[in-house]
Image (cartoon, rainbow, N blue to C red; front, side, top):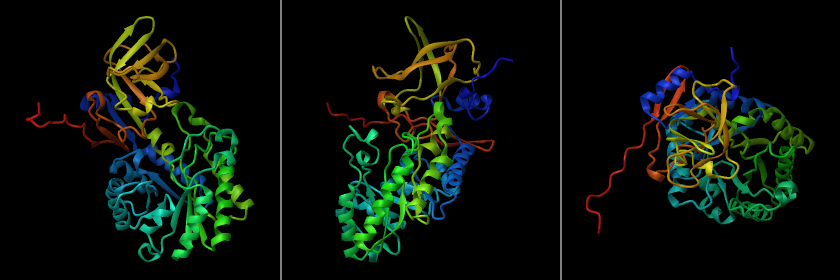
Length: 409
Protein backbone atom coordinates (compact mmCIF):
# COMPACT_ATOMS: atom_id res chain seq x y z
CA UNK A 1 0.00 0.00 0.00
CA UNK A 2 1.38 3.39 -0.98
CA UNK A 3 2.46 5.66 1.86
CA UNK A 4 0.29 8.67 2.71
CA UNK A 5 1.64 12.16 3.36
CA UNK A 6 0.89 12.66 7.04
CA UNK A 7 0.48 16.46 6.91
CA UNK A 8 -2.29 16.10 4.33
CA UNK A 9 -4.58 14.00 6.52
CA UNK A 10 -7.21 16.14 8.31
CA UNK A 11 -9.10 15.50 11.51
CA UNK A 12 -12.46 13.88 10.74
CA UNK A 13 -13.20 11.01 8.37
CA UNK A 14 -12.83 11.73 4.66
CA UNK A 15 -16.39 10.60 3.95
CA UNK A 16 -17.78 12.77 6.77
CA UNK A 17 -16.05 15.87 5.39
CA UNK A 18 -17.18 15.06 1.84
CA UNK A 19 -20.79 14.71 3.02
CA UNK A 20 -20.59 18.03 4.89
CA UNK A 21 -19.32 19.75 1.74
CA UNK A 22 -22.25 18.33 -0.21
CA UNK A 23 -24.84 19.28 2.41
CA UNK A 24 -23.66 22.81 3.26
CA UNK A 25 -21.74 23.72 0.12
CA UNK A 26 -18.26 25.21 -0.06
CA UNK A 27 -16.36 27.15 1.14
CA UNK A 28 -17.05 25.52 4.51
CA UNK A 29 -15.25 25.92 7.84
CA UNK A 30 -15.06 22.80 9.99
CA UNK A 31 -13.78 22.76 13.58
CA UNK A 32 -12.88 19.82 15.79
CA UNK A 33 -13.74 19.86 19.49
CA UNK A 34 -11.22 17.12 20.33
CA UNK A 35 -8.37 19.19 18.88
CA UNK A 36 -9.42 22.26 20.87
CA UNK A 37 -9.51 20.13 24.01
CA UNK A 38 -6.16 18.51 23.26
CA UNK A 39 -4.40 21.84 22.65
CA UNK A 40 -5.94 23.32 25.82
CA UNK A 41 -4.79 20.37 27.93
CA UNK A 42 -1.27 20.68 26.55
CA UNK A 43 -1.13 24.37 27.52
CA UNK A 44 -2.49 23.81 31.03
CA UNK A 45 -0.18 20.82 31.57
CA UNK A 46 2.85 22.88 30.52
CA UNK A 47 2.07 25.51 33.18
CA UNK A 48 0.81 23.07 35.83
CA UNK A 49 3.75 24.06 38.06
CA UNK A 50 2.28 27.58 38.43
CA UNK A 51 -0.39 27.64 41.11
CA UNK A 52 -1.93 30.92 39.93
CA UNK A 53 -1.80 30.19 36.20
CA UNK A 54 -4.67 31.55 34.08
CA UNK A 55 -5.21 31.38 30.32
CA UNK A 56 -7.41 33.94 28.52
CA UNK A 57 -8.37 33.12 24.95
CA UNK A 58 -8.64 36.21 22.66
CA UNK A 59 -12.25 36.36 21.44
CA UNK A 60 -11.26 38.25 18.28
CA UNK A 61 -9.62 35.10 16.91
CA UNK A 62 -12.72 32.91 16.96
CA UNK A 63 -15.93 34.95 17.30
CA UNK A 64 -18.43 32.13 17.81
CA UNK A 65 -19.97 31.36 21.24
CA UNK A 66 -20.18 27.63 20.48
CA UNK A 67 -16.40 27.44 20.00
CA UNK A 68 -15.64 29.78 22.89
CA UNK A 69 -17.83 27.63 25.14
CA UNK A 70 -15.54 24.64 24.50
CA UNK A 71 -12.54 26.64 25.71
CA UNK A 72 -14.43 27.97 28.73
CA UNK A 73 -15.36 24.40 29.66
CA UNK A 74 -11.67 23.49 29.43
CA UNK A 75 -10.87 26.17 32.02
CA UNK A 76 -9.99 29.17 29.84
CA UNK A 77 -11.03 32.73 30.58
CA UNK A 78 -11.80 35.03 27.64
CA UNK A 79 -9.91 38.14 26.51
CA UNK A 80 -12.29 40.83 25.19
CA UNK A 81 -11.68 44.24 23.65
CA UNK A 82 -15.20 45.67 23.23
CA UNK A 83 -18.84 45.30 24.26
CA UNK A 84 -19.53 42.93 21.36
CA UNK A 85 -16.81 40.54 22.53
CA UNK A 86 -18.18 40.69 26.06
CA UNK A 87 -21.64 39.73 24.78
CA UNK A 88 -20.09 36.70 23.05
CA UNK A 89 -18.24 35.81 26.26
CA UNK A 90 -21.50 35.92 28.21
CA UNK A 91 -23.17 33.65 25.64
CA UNK A 92 -20.24 31.25 26.01
CA UNK A 93 -20.78 31.13 29.77
CA UNK A 94 -17.47 32.79 30.68
CA UNK A 95 -17.10 33.93 34.29
CA UNK A 96 -13.47 35.03 34.07
CA UNK A 97 -13.15 37.89 31.54
CA UNK A 98 -10.15 40.07 30.76
CA UNK A 99 -10.88 43.45 29.14
CA UNK A 100 -8.42 45.59 27.23
CA UNK A 101 -8.86 48.26 24.55
CA UNK A 102 -6.67 51.08 23.25
CA UNK A 103 -9.57 53.45 22.65
CA UNK A 104 -12.69 52.02 24.34
CA UNK A 105 -16.09 53.66 24.21
CA UNK A 106 -18.24 54.34 27.25
CA UNK A 107 -20.37 51.37 26.18
CA UNK A 108 -17.27 49.15 26.28
CA UNK A 109 -16.39 50.33 29.81
CA UNK A 110 -19.94 49.74 31.02
CA UNK A 111 -20.02 46.25 29.50
CA UNK A 112 -16.72 45.37 31.19
CA UNK A 113 -18.01 46.68 34.50
CA UNK A 114 -21.29 44.76 34.20
CA UNK A 115 -19.53 41.38 34.00
CA UNK A 116 -16.87 42.15 36.62
CA UNK A 117 -14.06 41.91 34.06
CA UNK A 118 -10.43 42.33 35.03
CA UNK A 119 -9.41 45.56 33.29
CA UNK A 120 -6.07 46.12 31.59
CA UNK A 121 -5.27 49.81 31.19
CA UNK A 122 -3.56 51.01 28.03
CA UNK A 123 -2.39 54.36 29.43
CA UNK A 124 -2.49 56.48 32.58
CA UNK A 125 -5.42 58.56 31.29
CA UNK A 126 -7.66 55.50 31.56
CA UNK A 127 -7.20 55.54 35.35
CA UNK A 128 -10.07 58.04 35.43
CA UNK A 129 -12.43 55.24 34.32
CA UNK A 130 -11.71 53.02 37.34
CA UNK A 131 -11.32 53.54 41.06
CA UNK A 132 -10.79 51.28 44.08
CA UNK A 133 -14.41 51.97 45.07
CA UNK A 134 -16.05 50.86 41.80
CA UNK A 135 -13.49 48.21 40.90
CA UNK A 136 -13.91 46.07 44.02
CA UNK A 137 -11.12 43.71 45.05
CA UNK A 138 -9.97 42.91 41.52
CA UNK A 139 -6.36 43.44 40.50
CA UNK A 140 -5.90 46.34 38.08
CA UNK A 141 -3.77 45.46 35.06
CA UNK A 142 -1.37 47.65 33.06
CA UNK A 143 -0.26 46.84 29.52
CA UNK A 144 3.45 47.32 28.98
CA UNK A 145 5.14 47.53 25.59
CA UNK A 146 7.89 44.93 25.20
CA UNK A 147 11.24 46.67 24.85
CA UNK A 148 12.57 44.41 22.10
CA UNK A 149 15.75 46.44 21.61
CA UNK A 150 16.57 45.91 25.27
CA UNK A 151 15.26 42.36 25.56
CA UNK A 152 16.29 40.72 22.28
CA UNK A 153 18.34 43.06 20.06
CA UNK A 154 18.16 40.55 17.20
CA UNK A 155 14.43 41.19 16.78
CA UNK A 156 14.40 44.73 18.12
CA UNK A 157 15.84 46.48 15.11
CA UNK A 158 13.42 47.93 12.60
CA UNK A 159 10.20 47.12 14.45
CA UNK A 160 7.22 49.33 13.64
CA UNK A 161 5.49 51.73 16.03
CA UNK A 162 3.52 49.91 18.70
CA UNK A 163 0.12 51.45 19.48
CA UNK A 164 -0.51 49.10 22.39
CA UNK A 165 0.27 49.90 26.00
CA UNK A 166 2.95 51.94 27.76
CA UNK A 167 6.70 51.99 27.76
CA UNK A 168 8.18 50.78 31.04
CA UNK A 169 8.98 54.40 31.99
CA UNK A 170 5.36 55.46 31.39
CA UNK A 171 4.11 52.43 33.29
CA UNK A 172 6.13 53.37 36.39
CA UNK A 173 4.55 56.83 36.35
CA UNK A 174 1.08 55.31 35.92
CA UNK A 175 1.72 52.90 38.81
CA UNK A 176 2.54 55.85 41.06
CA UNK A 177 -0.75 57.48 40.05
CA UNK A 178 -2.57 54.23 40.83
CA UNK A 179 -0.94 54.11 44.26
CA UNK A 180 -2.01 57.70 44.94
CA UNK A 181 -5.57 56.77 43.89
CA UNK A 182 -5.65 53.99 46.47
CA UNK A 183 -4.91 50.84 44.48
CA UNK A 184 -2.83 48.26 46.37
CA UNK A 185 -2.42 45.49 43.76
CA UNK A 186 -1.46 45.55 40.09
CA UNK A 187 -0.90 43.06 37.29
CA UNK A 188 1.49 43.50 34.37
CA UNK A 189 0.40 42.38 30.92
CA UNK A 190 2.65 42.28 27.85
CA UNK A 191 1.72 41.61 24.24
CA UNK A 192 4.64 39.59 23.03
CA UNK A 193 6.18 38.35 19.84
CA UNK A 194 5.87 34.60 19.20
CA UNK A 195 7.70 33.05 22.14
CA UNK A 196 9.30 30.31 20.05
CA UNK A 197 10.85 32.65 17.45
CA UNK A 198 14.13 33.26 19.26
CA UNK A 199 15.80 30.58 21.35
CA UNK A 200 15.53 31.43 25.04
CA UNK A 201 13.01 34.23 24.45
CA UNK A 202 10.63 33.11 27.26
CA UNK A 203 13.44 33.62 29.78
CA UNK A 204 14.15 37.11 28.44
CA UNK A 205 10.48 38.06 28.43
CA UNK A 206 9.99 36.76 31.97
CA UNK A 207 13.06 38.59 33.21
CA UNK A 208 11.81 41.86 31.70
CA UNK A 209 8.41 41.55 33.40
CA UNK A 210 9.82 40.47 36.75
CA UNK A 211 12.43 43.22 36.82
CA UNK A 212 9.66 45.71 36.07
CA UNK A 213 7.51 44.12 38.81
CA UNK A 214 10.33 44.57 41.29
CA UNK A 215 10.77 48.21 40.30
CA UNK A 216 7.03 48.92 40.54
CA UNK A 217 6.92 47.44 44.02
CA UNK A 218 10.06 49.34 45.07
CA UNK A 219 8.88 52.73 43.82
CA UNK A 220 5.19 52.52 44.74
CA UNK A 221 4.72 49.90 47.43
CA UNK A 222 2.04 48.28 45.29
CA UNK A 223 2.13 44.49 45.10
CA UNK A 224 2.38 43.01 41.59
CA UNK A 225 0.04 40.02 41.82
CA UNK A 226 0.48 38.53 38.36
CA UNK A 227 2.38 38.84 35.09
CA UNK A 228 0.69 38.06 31.77
CA UNK A 229 3.16 36.75 29.20
CA UNK A 230 0.76 37.46 26.32
CA UNK A 231 0.06 35.04 23.48
CA UNK A 232 1.78 34.67 20.16
CA UNK A 233 2.95 31.06 20.43
CA UNK A 234 4.06 30.22 16.91
CA UNK A 235 1.96 27.56 15.14
CA UNK A 236 1.35 26.35 11.63
CA UNK A 237 0.70 22.91 10.15
CA UNK A 238 4.14 22.51 8.60
CA UNK A 239 6.08 23.43 11.77
CA UNK A 240 3.82 21.94 14.42
CA UNK A 241 6.61 19.67 15.67
CA UNK A 242 8.90 22.63 16.34
CA UNK A 243 6.91 23.70 19.40
CA UNK A 244 8.12 22.25 22.69
CA UNK A 245 5.56 23.82 25.00
CA UNK A 246 6.80 22.19 28.25
CA UNK A 247 10.28 23.49 27.45
CA UNK A 248 9.00 27.02 26.81
CA UNK A 249 6.97 27.03 30.03
CA UNK A 250 9.93 25.51 31.86
CA UNK A 251 12.11 28.45 30.85
CA UNK A 252 9.57 30.79 32.45
CA UNK A 253 9.67 28.76 35.68
CA UNK A 254 13.46 28.62 35.69
CA UNK A 255 13.82 32.38 35.35
CA UNK A 256 11.12 33.14 37.95
CA UNK A 257 12.77 30.89 40.52
CA UNK A 258 16.20 32.33 39.82
CA UNK A 259 14.90 35.86 40.39
CA UNK A 260 13.08 35.05 43.62
CA UNK A 261 9.56 35.07 42.12
CA UNK A 262 8.84 31.34 42.45
CA UNK A 263 5.27 32.05 43.59
CA UNK A 264 4.42 34.66 40.94
CA UNK A 265 1.11 33.93 39.20
CA UNK A 266 1.65 33.81 35.43
CA UNK A 267 -1.14 34.35 32.93
CA UNK A 268 -1.25 33.95 29.13
CA UNK A 269 -3.64 34.92 26.34
CA UNK A 270 -2.63 32.23 23.86
CA UNK A 271 -4.83 32.12 20.77
CA UNK A 272 -3.38 30.59 17.61
CA UNK A 273 -1.81 27.61 19.35
CA UNK A 274 -5.26 26.56 20.59
CA UNK A 275 -7.47 27.58 17.68
CA UNK A 276 -5.46 27.20 14.46
CA UNK A 277 -5.04 23.41 14.41
CA UNK A 278 -8.73 22.96 15.30
CA UNK A 279 -10.04 24.40 12.02
CA UNK A 280 -9.96 23.50 8.32
CA UNK A 281 -11.57 25.16 5.30
CA UNK A 282 -13.09 22.97 2.59
CA UNK A 283 -13.04 24.54 -0.87
CA UNK A 284 -14.15 23.10 -4.21
CA UNK A 285 -11.97 23.31 -7.31
CA UNK A 286 -13.72 25.33 -10.05
CA UNK A 287 -11.16 24.82 -12.76
CA UNK A 288 -7.52 24.12 -13.60
CA UNK A 289 -5.44 26.21 -16.02
CA UNK A 290 -2.46 24.33 -17.46
CA UNK A 291 -0.25 26.93 -19.09
CA UNK A 292 3.36 27.76 -18.28
CA UNK A 293 2.27 27.22 -14.68
CA UNK A 294 -0.57 25.09 -13.35
CA UNK A 295 -3.14 27.29 -11.60
CA UNK A 296 -5.88 25.67 -9.55
CA UNK A 297 -8.97 27.88 -9.21
CA UNK A 298 -11.09 27.43 -6.08
CA UNK A 299 -14.31 28.89 -4.68
CA UNK A 300 -12.49 30.11 -1.54
CA UNK A 301 -11.13 33.62 -1.70
CA UNK A 302 -9.14 36.09 0.35
CA UNK A 303 -12.53 37.16 1.68
CA UNK A 304 -12.70 33.75 3.41
CA UNK A 305 -9.03 33.68 4.46
CA UNK A 306 -7.94 37.34 4.50
CA UNK A 307 -4.76 36.63 6.45
CA UNK A 308 -3.27 34.96 3.36
CA UNK A 309 -2.36 38.40 1.98
CA UNK A 310 -0.16 39.14 5.02
CA UNK A 311 3.60 38.61 4.62
CA UNK A 312 4.72 35.21 5.85
CA UNK A 313 1.23 33.70 6.23
CA UNK A 314 0.89 30.42 4.36
CA UNK A 315 -1.66 27.66 4.94
CA UNK A 316 -0.92 24.03 4.18
CA UNK A 317 -3.24 22.76 1.42
CA UNK A 318 -4.16 19.17 0.54
CA UNK A 319 -6.75 17.38 -1.59
CA UNK A 320 -9.54 15.59 0.29
CA UNK A 321 -9.17 11.83 -0.17
CA UNK A 322 -5.86 12.02 -2.11
CA UNK A 323 -3.03 11.65 0.37
CA UNK A 324 -0.49 9.57 -1.57
CA UNK A 325 3.03 10.97 -1.83
CA UNK A 326 3.63 9.98 -5.46
CA UNK A 327 2.03 11.49 -8.55
CA UNK A 328 2.15 15.09 -7.37
CA UNK A 329 2.50 18.30 -9.36
CA UNK A 330 3.66 21.81 -8.58
CA UNK A 331 0.91 24.37 -8.89
CA UNK A 332 -0.47 27.70 -7.70
CA UNK A 333 -3.81 28.02 -5.92
CA UNK A 334 -6.09 31.00 -6.59
CA UNK A 335 -9.54 32.22 -5.62
CA UNK A 336 -12.31 33.57 -7.87
CA UNK A 337 -12.01 37.30 -7.10
CA UNK A 338 -10.66 39.49 -9.89
CA UNK A 339 -7.79 40.89 -7.88
CA UNK A 340 -4.12 40.39 -8.57
CA UNK A 341 -3.39 39.64 -4.91
CA UNK A 342 -6.02 36.88 -5.02
CA UNK A 343 -3.43 34.11 -5.13
CA UNK A 344 -2.54 31.98 -2.13
CA UNK A 345 1.13 32.63 -1.45
CA UNK A 346 3.75 30.45 -3.08
CA UNK A 347 3.69 27.18 -4.96
CA UNK A 348 2.08 23.99 -3.67
CA UNK A 349 2.89 20.37 -4.44
CA UNK A 350 -0.49 18.65 -4.74
CA UNK A 351 -1.85 15.40 -6.17
CA UNK A 352 -3.38 15.68 -9.65
CA UNK A 353 -6.36 18.02 -9.28
CA UNK A 354 -9.54 18.12 -11.37
CA UNK A 355 -12.62 20.40 -11.29
CA UNK A 356 -14.99 19.26 -8.55
CA UNK A 357 -12.24 18.06 -6.20
CA UNK A 358 -12.23 19.45 -2.68
CA UNK A 359 -9.17 21.20 -1.27
CA UNK A 360 -8.44 21.35 2.44
CA UNK A 361 -6.84 24.48 3.90
CA UNK A 362 -5.32 23.31 7.20
CA UNK A 363 -4.74 25.29 10.39
CA UNK A 364 -7.37 27.99 9.77
CA UNK A 365 -9.14 27.87 13.14
CA UNK A 366 -7.92 31.32 14.17
CA UNK A 367 -8.71 34.59 12.35
CA UNK A 368 -10.85 33.01 9.61
CA UNK A 369 -14.60 33.60 9.94
CA UNK A 370 -13.79 36.36 12.44
CA UNK A 371 -11.95 38.29 9.71
CA UNK A 372 -14.10 37.27 6.74
CA UNK A 373 -15.51 40.03 4.54
CA UNK A 374 -18.00 40.35 1.66
CA UNK A 375 -15.22 41.56 -0.65
CA UNK A 376 -15.75 40.36 -4.19
CA UNK A 377 -19.29 39.18 -3.47
CA UNK A 378 -18.20 36.51 -1.00
CA UNK A 379 -20.74 35.44 1.63
CA UNK A 380 -19.50 34.40 5.07
CA UNK A 381 -19.27 30.62 4.96
CA UNK A 382 -21.03 28.20 7.35
CA UNK A 383 -19.25 26.80 10.40
CA UNK A 384 -19.52 23.18 11.53
CA UNK A 385 -18.32 21.74 14.84
CA UNK A 386 -17.32 18.06 14.95
CA UNK A 387 -18.23 17.17 18.52
CA UNK A 388 -17.09 13.62 19.36
CA UNK A 389 -18.88 12.04 16.41
CA UNK A 390 -21.66 14.61 15.98
CA UNK A 391 -21.70 17.27 13.26
CA UNK A 392 -23.26 20.49 14.57
CA UNK A 393 -23.92 23.55 12.43
CA UNK A 394 -22.88 26.48 14.62
CA UNK A 395 -23.32 29.21 11.98
CA UNK A 396 -25.22 29.34 8.70
CA UNK A 397 -23.90 30.87 5.50
CA UNK A 398 -24.51 34.62 5.41
CA UNK A 399 -27.61 35.58 3.42
CA UNK A 400 -27.40 37.65 0.24
CA UNK A 401 -27.69 41.28 1.42
CA UNK A 402 -30.73 43.31 0.41
CA UNK A 403 -30.64 46.98 -0.54
CA UNK A 404 -33.23 49.78 -0.50
CA UNK A 405 -35.47 49.81 -3.57
CA UNK A 406 -35.24 53.56 -4.00
CA UNK A 407 -31.57 54.14 -4.75
CA UNK A 408 -30.81 57.83 -5.38
CA UNK A 409 -29.85 58.57 -8.96
